[in-house]
Amino acid sequence: MAEATRGEERAGAGPPPDLPVRRTARIVLADERDRILLFRFVDNDSTIPGGTWWGTVGGGVHEGESLSQAAARELFEETGLRVPPQRFDVVVARNRGVARFFGQERWYENHYYFLRAAGFELDASGWEQIERAAIAEHRWWSAAELAATAESVHPPGLARLLPDLLAGRLPREPVEVGPD
Image (cartoon, rainbow, N blue to C red):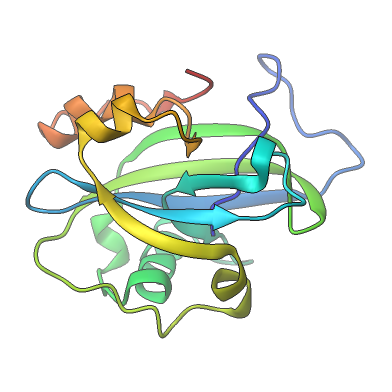
């Protein structure tokens, strides 16, 4: 589930003491045609102006679960694609900040992986109720479409990150993605 943050907090800042923390594992999923799968989320009570944004596959890390285990589980739940957790070995980007999603304000710590998957059809049968309520549609975006859109896309800065990811150049350290 994509929770869009209200921008990154000041450098070095941690979560406000009164907010719960939600760690997420997210996947920038590319197909064989260099397109990225994004979901369009609708939540009129979110911190996003207009309550609509496009976001990556992924969601919350359960207690006792590693980021890579959460990425593999979320990928399967949201797309039907089964990939072993070992395939999620490099966090390519991250961001953090305060966001309100379906009436709950939290501090989000989002971790993004990159994965290529050729020739599969999205299977939404594993969606939980919140995904069925929040996801209005899905679509595959080219890097050019993503760079040109005026729609809200999360993580911010995804379009800048894509050329290197699609070329197989993964960063040595996670890139901090924030407002464009």
